[in-house]
Image (cartoon, rainbow, N blue to C red; front, side, top):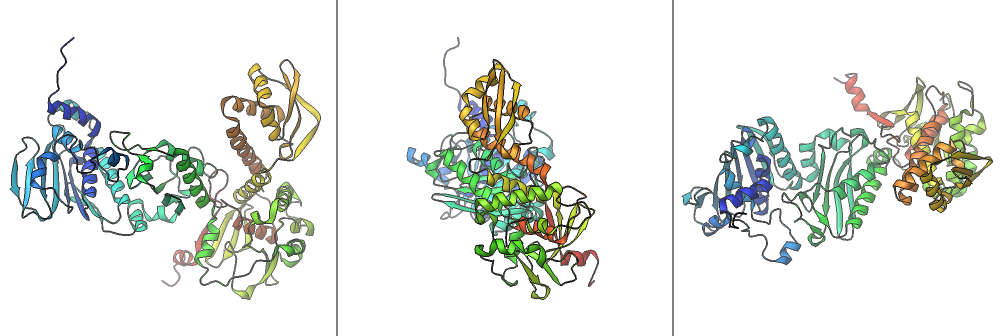
Length: 622
């Protein structure tokens, strides 16, 4: 074996560059973060040939003293931490002090800087460490040219100019999103591609993500002790086929963390198809002592001290935000101009519901329309009302009347269990989704609200309403349906063992399972809501999942999957003709249902066309 020897400083720095400097975007990230840490209020970035030929970053920060310029290019030399306590509470973007040294080892690097109290600026050459006077008002200019000029083998791994510029643009966007208070400009080959003045966070997000993203996103604001989450999360209709529009920041630092990604994905699980990805720009703020940023060379991964608490906080904050109905947001926007109507009391709920069919008009000639007290949410009416509503909706979807026939009074009255009242046409107010006008090809409901035209996919909307109500009914111990003849079927040895080990779990879900033979199981009862399901197939799937996953996960995930399937098959189908009272009942229940903007598969359930949009289309007033 060769003798042990100390590596030359240049080789040490080049090895470190393999971790820090992967491509031009890595250089830009490190230099931009240094500019932010220096307190810059304006930063300009100039790139040539995707950053391979040249990267020049100019800032107006605090600058570097002449005596410290040479030290800035040394490994592990930094002004940002001085002790272990500082490392445990890192509040800056950079802190290791190896970035500039690694960059100077693989590129022609110069630093020009003028400290706040200095009479003039100084420039240092990264190759020979020579220092000379220079001209600069204030701040620092870092110029990196000919990346990997002295390591051609690594230069071969770089991609095309367009690809490398795209990575640099992504890094620039991350810094710009994290710091909307800083003026930033990016130019490539002499052409300015981004010019971002200081602005509120929402404006900066719109400038970088597009107005369509902001229009299709919900604003997130949540606090819980030392944790705070803010930003924007897109609706499922704006979902993407890739993760290119996902930005998560922890204390201003862009990160890709599996814990955070999982929390976001779980929040979207009930409204987004599995092959699609949400778009979001989220900012998590917490005590720096609660997060370790020193776990990855590029500082893109973090570790939380209370990982489960952070996960649950993000999950519940996003789930609450996404559960809000878009219809209610429309109403809140117009609340300053629209008259307010007081909801009927719960005491009169049943009496008013019983007369709902008599107060409505299916022809529209009476000048009144039936509508529910839309400000009363269904969750407030109790478990009994939920169960009654679920039964009535299942009857409604099953075809309580022949297609095209007149609706029986009882069927219209039992469509829902919430109060209704007749609203005079001259009162000038309407619920958020308005009043039904007609049905289009047996698929869509046309409605009019105070803003214009509402178009509703009746199957998708009914599917979400059913699904949410079925989940609420099963929040407690589900009702059980005894089977007249037990369902006996053969299973594998592993399934037999799983059935014996998870007998209590299955009983809690409503299944009475016992052994009927060496390789046979007998099911004597099932949940009442699954009475028509194929018992043998259902039990085999449950037992397989119980073998692979923790029982608590199966109870929640599988239950929701089954309920989603039931809701899809139980929802009103295309070509089913509805009366105006039935259509209005569906609209009112959409307004009172969480996540009603999307069906169980993530498709939108309704859309709004404003009067201004309709006027522009027909060129009225032009």
